Image (cartoon, rainbow, N blue to C red; front, side):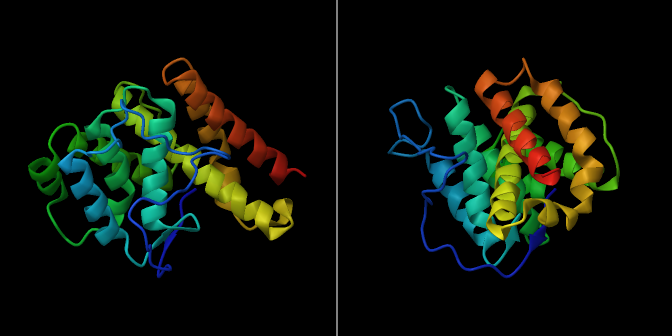
Length: 217
């Protein structure tokens, strides 16, 4: 699913106005963790993500923009999004590009619970998915929230690229790994239904259905 390359065009803004899904705009309502004034840990995480992501691309998007989309996707679907989960969303993808550091220690010292646990779990999920067809662990809801948001963003980015190509079926032929992993993603979508908010599981199922339609068009 995920392709990571570099370099990318530099991100020239601090909080990109990018949608998680078509038509979505971030509303900094009073209950949002993104409302001003922002928690200093969140501000620090944004700055850290920018540093780690500079010059990199994830799924066709500048990596910093990708990380922000995942955080904003959570804010769209979770009415009680915590600062810690928002930070984990920002840093789980961007940490791919971190310099050789003791990542768990760095995250624990700078951001605290539950950031290291979520980032560690998502990095492990990514590694097992690359290796084969992993089991789906739904025991940690915070990890499940971020993992679902990550997939929604990744698949929307992939679908946008396919549609922009002018030939969706041909585009997906060039991405054979997606077809191989499609059963896993469908199982994941089924597993999270009833656990994550309905709007989130629906968003994942809809983008997967759109990709399936594009592959078979």
